[in-house]
Image 1 (cartoon, helix red, strand yellow):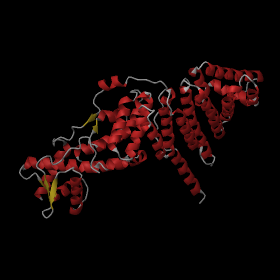
Image 2 (cartoon, rainbow over the protein chains, first blue to last red; image 1 turned 90 degrees about the vertical axis):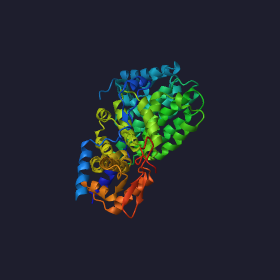
Image 3 (spheres, rainbow over the protein chains, first blue to last red; image 1 turned 180 degrees about the vertical axis):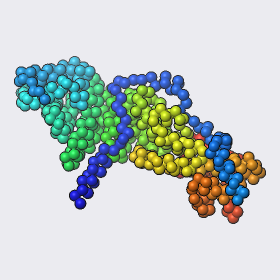
Image 4 (cartoon, one colour; image 1 turned 45 degrees about the horizontal axis):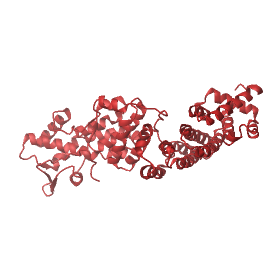
Length: 72
Length: 413
């Protein structure tokens, strides 16, 4: 029984210090050339992935599965 | 802790007082900052603390001396703070520092120019980290941790001092960001609202005038709030701003921005390139991206389960779970394409039985009713264009664009 309140307190203590993702402080007067990096950087995102290509492994397996199912 | 001689102790104290006084009278903020920076634990501050602990009556001496009386209100509590700090008594160090900070603010208000703004930033930072450490100490001793909450109140007051016309107002965003860090740490994020409202609606503030580093931090935290509130369009705008304007060398910060931006992008149908996940060590998203590309519902579920704790902690679990609908869409689209290749005339009619078989292959057992329900939801949310031929248990797909792309908008609520 004595162990319980202590465990609860541990939890409360951990809850207190939430936020694993606290932003690191920038230096005062820290400046950088963000623009430069952006134009040289390779593309970060793709929005044309939703194509009609069904030649990948997953799609081939799916096709086989549907054919087998159709037969049974 | 090697204590100095009395004479040496005296010298250290008067040296500090002289430097403080000179910095103020010549408006030299670069010299003032290190005198306030407790957390730097600089050798000179530590040795000053030793001197104070030895002298014990330094404070009385300051107050009595004409020379230092002007600064006494600031320096006396600061000395008390240093003494407590040196003796590892943080619960006492915090209130003393706050008292010193408060006295500093009173002087700050009287200075017309913003020459001391950087010193104020140091004070704000010290208030926050000292309060955090004090609370850890209090908790460890079984006492109630209330210093960080007090720090929040204090910084709100400082914000108020800066929220006026004049050059000091550019400091308001730094204060805001310190407040965000406190509120997020305490889990009282609802308190962010009032300061956000001030920044975004008060006439005196022009967001573009604030320093870049503060704008990035601000957009990161307000972006996270938008994620919590499921405003994905706003979340994307803010987090993208933070990403685009963040110091490219701040890898830790970039990683944090991406950690929240990626789920948002996924929910509007945009995928991160794998090199991005690799570079910033966010590989927990890899299988989720793959699941979306494939239409592999089993993979999505296993990826969610594998990293459940991590996603729950950062609060993005629900955002990712909702991706199920997009994965269903992709799966159905693949079935449609496969059928179309086999028999183009019949492709727009998809039997529910076929969907059930595909799901069974993915080790997901669903009956007719359940699949019908999912398809109904997909149609309702415009992820599928078509209608049910209920009796024949067939989905009749629109001949044109039966699987509309999200193209950067979130799935209909």
